[in-house]
Amino acid sequence: MNFQTPYYWYDLTLLDKTLNVLSKTAESYGYKIHYAVKANNNERILRRIAHEGYGADCVSGNEVLLAMKCGFHASKIFFAGVGKTDDEIITALQHGIGALVVESIEELEVISELTQQLQRQANIILRINPEVDAHTHGNITTGLKENKFGISESRIFDALSIMRQSSERLLFRGIHFHIGSQMMDFDPVRELCIKVNAIRDAIVSEGFYPRIIDLGGGLGIDYDYPEGQPIPDFVNWCQAIYDTLRLESGEEVHLEPGRSIVGQCGMLISKVLYVKQGEEKKFVILDAGMTELIRPALYGAKHAVRKIKRMGENNRPVFESASISDNSELYDVVGPICESSDTFAKNLPLPPMRRNDLVAILSAGAYGEVMSSEYNGHTKPRVFYSDMKLSDEEH
Ligand SMILES: *Cc1c(COP(=O)(O)O)cnc(C)c1O
Picture 1 (cartoon, rainbow, N blue to C red):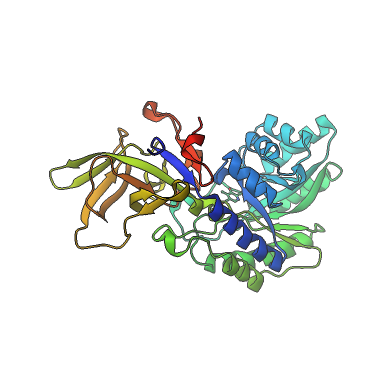
Picture 2: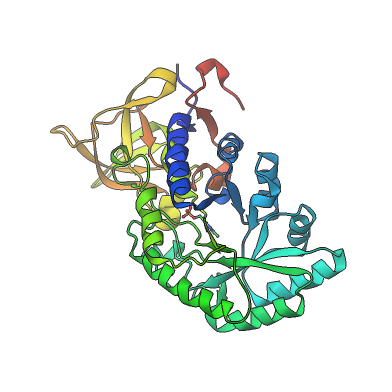
């Protein structure tokens, strides 16, 4: 007997190991970590990450509330996002969160009014668009001129002049940058840091001293062969920053990793419903599709797919060899949803596949469960953890 598919399975041991390496690395560089909640807002995972003492990077009022519920200290919560509603801003102010990460002059004006109405102060971090290309997928690049995120360099001084006018209520805490996601080399990070040095100097020359220099998230994970690098390269990420960012005394580096913390600890387990012989191709049709994991359909993302041989200890899947063998065949691995983009892989070599075989779609811990939907009448996927037994089946 197995858990009923499709479901997410989280390897909490790997999550703990990843947190351990990240904490040691961050500590040795003296950098502070805020987990980007949007990557995975599963409560068990949030609680585990909060326990590590990290802050949270949130992008909605509900994420702020969830982060607090799961143990993140309000003072360590940053709230970013280009479209904060008045209600969300008020919620954040009332809970006294660490800072609002402000993405436009227009937003700054609204926050200034709301702080006046509420007779409260707001910690402000200005998100600046550094115009650095993260060289990643177009839909996850955020630091280019054409992107909607952050305040453009040419308007920084307008932002500072609003800060100056409202200096009793708007407290300047720092500057924030996030150039994109799934970065696999560190040249964009170095390029960013060199820009940040100049932007910080310009801001200081206006009489504003940033305590927090937040460089966002974006560290990538190995989707091609996750078994080879289950824990991302936190050290070289930090080292690239250390090598290029000029820190003045009293300044703190904050990082906001999302994907790199949770990406490799989750997999989506699905059952083969049919192996369909098409005109030219063989299709493996799964009971999971873009409703359970939308990244391939949304970003053209590739996830490794493994045939499961059996379930091992704690329902940890044991895979048939990942290497291509003589009897491998080429399959298109697709979901059941009525969309052509509902495709996980094309021409993928797999061992011969049959109805009722189980497969694992790897590296699904980030932007997986959290993006699942009920399209086509699917129910939200079930979730199991490496410390659960079959009898613990919940939901
Ligand atoms: C999405 C996001 C992150 C996390 O990005 P990852 O690529 O998952 O590390 C961090 N900061 C901000 C502001 C974000 O929007």
